Image (cartoon, rainbow, N blue to C red; front, side, top):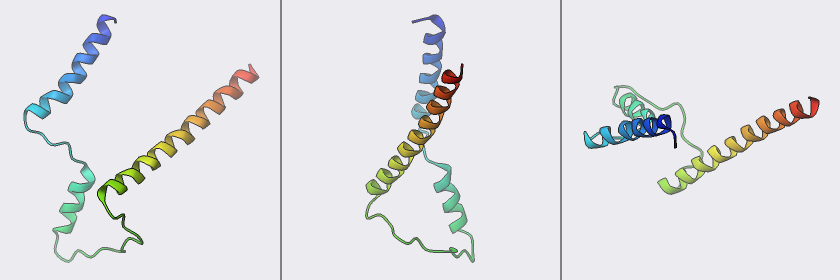
Length: 89
């Protein structure tokens, strides 16, 4: 392992560990924005969801599947473009 890799790994570890030691929370901006909007007077949602998952775990599963499928499509497109370029050359 090179010196550069060790330094980069140490920096990443510091970026992750220091906020945890300081009592920071890793929460998403979506939840904070939704909470801020819902506290305003006169807030009414524009629509209701068609179906809500029965638990947070199921919701996380669907989110993970969506991310995996998106990564698969992007990886396929990049691989296909590279294959075409190599075949052309």
